[in-house]
Image (cartoon, rainbow, N blue to C red; front, side, top):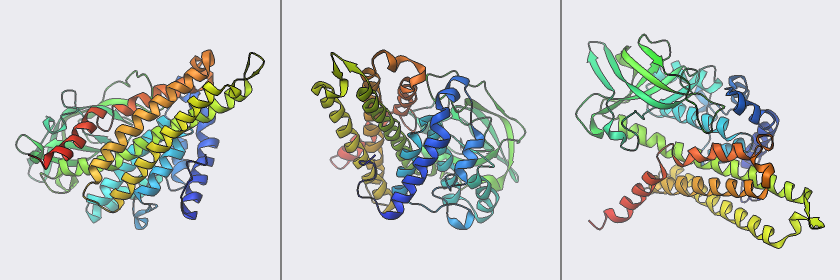
Length: 384
């Protein structure tokens, strides 16, 4: 893990070591079983919250850890070495907590953040719809003002944690078509009219539930509006900048685990009278995997530092980092499976699970095609 800890401060080293220890003790030994049983380990999430991982970016006065994005990418990379699926949900939960802390009123922060930080309450992010994924601004879920309440109607798709989560940040249309007509709302699991679809059968990420969130005339008090009317799309996109870094970091952690396992496997296996690790062709492949991960890690950390500084180009860097790290992570994990030969295809070795988990990272938090659109618009916009 030397490449992971390069150029870190003493405080960051301590964060990485503590998180790695947690991941190896509480996540890694159970990751395959959780995947096979489709078990969502809420008890383990609450143990993670005991280390401050339920409110990584939330201010300390509300029970959070008050860490930077630069610290956060280290946390999620380390967690994902134990289980990318659980680490991925924690990234989403922390995105929700950050959005409440950043855009909520004092009353909203006091009501929700303490239990989000302890993970007594879990959070989910509801933007995608059956007909509005990459074109998020085309969403159709509607919120209509009715006196001191809003009434929400619509369906959200592919929602991580749905059914288990207590708090849902729901993006809904309060105005005209386009991004300017979208607002954000805080919906609670017990609100009348809220229901959930069946737990989706997925290729990976089986250690967390994914369901539709159905809003059938859900009536909520007007003080559950997050931010102001019409600010929802901006709030959602700002949340996704950090969320993309979290998922990018999870790809790094999963791929790093696959690389480490490959090193151990090749050292143990012999062919033609000598360890496979002595074969130069395989050494070169390992070297390429390590180099590509190091390059992706550097870009993720650069983007995190830019987001911490609120640099003008931070959203484009976050898109670059998400695209590059998730593509690289999946490619490295796939090559790790190949290096394991037939054993890589067996569930008990855990490599095929990492491959399946990392594949979805190229889709969620904005597909990698959309990441290219964001970067391309930044490059070409000044020329128009």
